[in-house]
Each structure stands twice: as C-alpha cells, then as structure tokens.
Image (tube, rainbow, N blue to C red; front, top):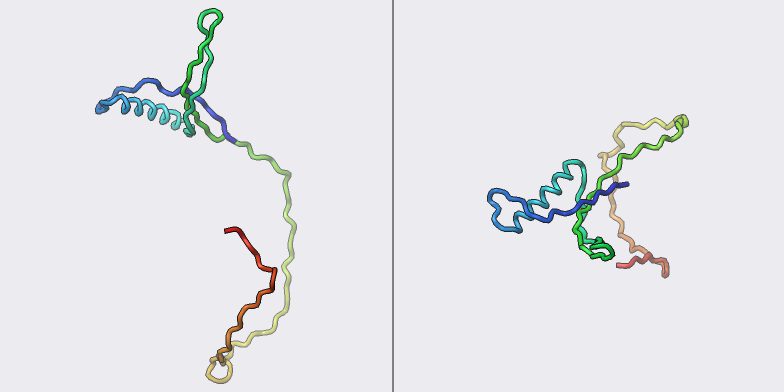
Length: 133
C-alpha cells in the first residue's frame, strides 16, 4: 500500500550561477522540489494539470488550471500476527540397502558401448499442445 502527496508545481524559475535561460531556471526549481521530497522518502510519480473553480466577486466563478506534482511512498506495514504453528515431527525412513562392492569389474573396466540406432519420436494425432505465438 502507498500513501500519496500532491503539491503544487513551481511556477517560477530559481536563480543560480551559470543558468541563463528561463527554461534552465525553471527546470532547476522543479528539480529542487522533487529532490526535497525525495529526501523525505517520497517517490515522484507524475505531474497533472487539473481545473480549479474559484470565486470571483459575490456570485461569479472562474476556472483556473493548476499544475500539481504527485508523489508516493510505501506505508509502513504492520506484520500480521499469525497463530503460532508448531511444525510436525517427521521421522526419517530408514531402509536397508545391499552392500555396494567397490571392486573393479572383470575385464578392462570399460562397459560394452555398442551404439544403437536412434528411434524417431512418435506423435499421436490430436494430442499436440498448441500455444499462440
């Protein structure tokens, strides 16, 4: 689960040494806003432009478009306490095996390796597994 934070995007650039264009100053302001919240654990998601109805005079209203920056961070989740489970005791299965001889077989110790011809695999009609490519 996440919690979200929405903040207004900067509307003016920030003066800094070496930045001459308005675009560079504005980018620095956005960068500083993102880095300030990232230092608090917030992850930048996106920017949105949303309408805002504001009153003008006694009875009028105007729509202003606001640029907002959306951030999120993971909620600290509490571990769910499960009832204590005791594992079942499993007894090992003991079987008796025949003793294995470590003696070298008679002859030169090499098994007879007569090659056998390979057989073609057989397929039954209608049992193929098909998947879309």
